[in-house]
Length: 146
Image (tube, rainbow, N blue to C red; front, top):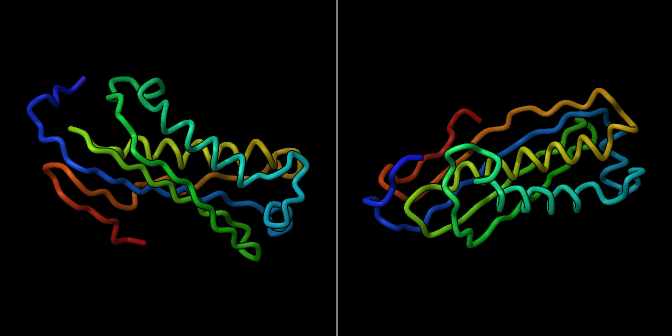
């Protein structure tokens, strides 16, 4: 584990994204709330939040952080057959929350897969990535390539 004891405690924010691709028909079921397992987006949101809170248990050498906020939002593009998940994590600590945001987005995407796999096996999870982060020694960073 990296020693962060000499780092300043600062407000830190990270935002991550995951894209789940499926057929427009399956995306329509999710949007309408008609998937066989129920409210796909609501369950995925809770799963992502829970996962962020347990990141230190899932990722070796990851620091346990006092999370001040975790949110997961979904945007469904039914004609394109995509669901974009955006996960945000915030803390005031000596190390960043990138892993918490990435874990939230990833687990939310996996939850969507689990909840629609009975309808469609060909669902894919794409573009799990950090979009932006702020705080700490390295300051603010934002993805510029889309």
